[in-house]
Length: 296
Image (cartoon, rainbow, N blue to C red; front, side, top):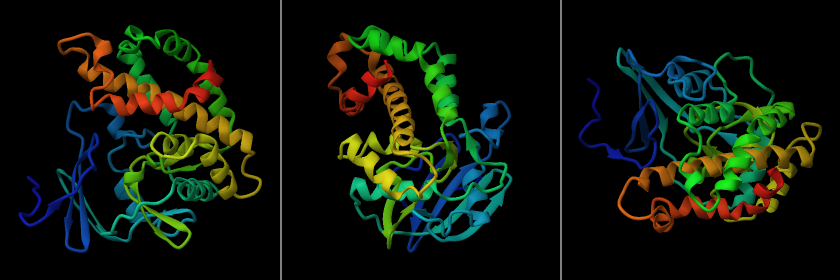
């Protein structure tokens, strides 16, 4: 059985359906990815699904995002594979805080990258995530809150908004551009990690995810993304549509997930809105009120 060496320093984050953990060993980083076991969800073995277990290793081996404009990966130092999984080695990059508009513009530049002809890019990420929620019954916890009517309206209209996404220009997307994954800069580019959800999506989708954690307003980030987008890829209006739908449905889903985790404990649900594991997700949703209203 694979185990990290005693002297390795465990890094925060890096947890996912197939990720065992991430460790630093001097000037290099080891990411351990576990192969699916019998009985695991079929999604882990589907190369087009966002949860496909091998994608990070395939990206590193191909060099696909080593020199892409806007976003690029740290240098790959090695890939070790055994019967239980894969250990991916990359150079260690010291994290540096970057302003939201710089990140948004970099995401726009990255979205102009020609779509590569590989079979393992993630597709339909938001639709697949919402399908998982649907199998669990929908946003059932939010149905017990003061935003129940809003959540119900959004849930009912999700086929309409997913169809809107499908009609937008398709671009290359990182898939999880949170600040913790956008760690440093190399000139005008951003050094990004955790490429396991790299895929094809609607223009603006990455911007929508970024807007949930960036300090700047949605409109400021949208302008920066559109400024970085190469001419002819999409219009600013299309960028806003893609970002808005991804941001709103992701924010509501995260609020549902956070509330559901604490809902079973003692006390009224309303008394848990300020719980430290819930409040950040509700604040993120509150900041998007104008975008939510536009989708109702």
